[in-house]
Length: 253
Image (tube, rainbow, N blue to C red; front, side, top):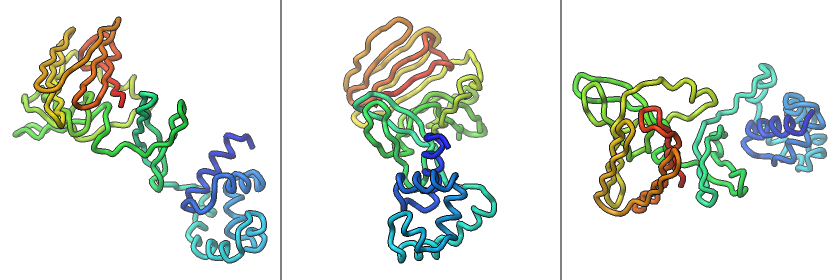
């Protein structure tokens, strides 16, 4: 087995045992047994003394593990590793980058590949990206999407004119850019900050900023706009050259 495959299968096996073994221990047994299913069969069904000797664990520890993990026999019978995961957003302030990663529900952490610092997932109520809006205006029920920051962004429903708070952020996938519905409609966004508010309206070909409190620092670059909301300590970068519903913004924390 290749090293990458061993690491992946060892990680899946480790999650089945809720982190009772280290990554190195699981890689050792996966490599020696020739795969995750064979490794699981070894740990659950082979004599506890033999398993404890191989993994350098006490016999009592392995006996308790085998007794408490009887439910994992279903995994052996089906051959399917059902590890509960979720797709979460992470951010590195030092490297000024963010990313999404599918992680186990048991431990939602990820490491920045630039500085190698490990981070907990960003709370759901503070995520940003491509948001989903559900209009609760009278007799409306319109659904639409657009860039948003949870708890901060309101977007105007073009069906009834009601301003709607973002419901949730849609995790990206490698096909999401091509699947976005193309439209010439513009959108209005309102961002509320803790120490004030910054209101700006996106109109085709222009951006209008209205600053109530705090300050905004922005720099014009070819094809993009970079501006910083100082009071909120949030940095947004306008990636595309046009300001319409297809514009894409990347917050950098």
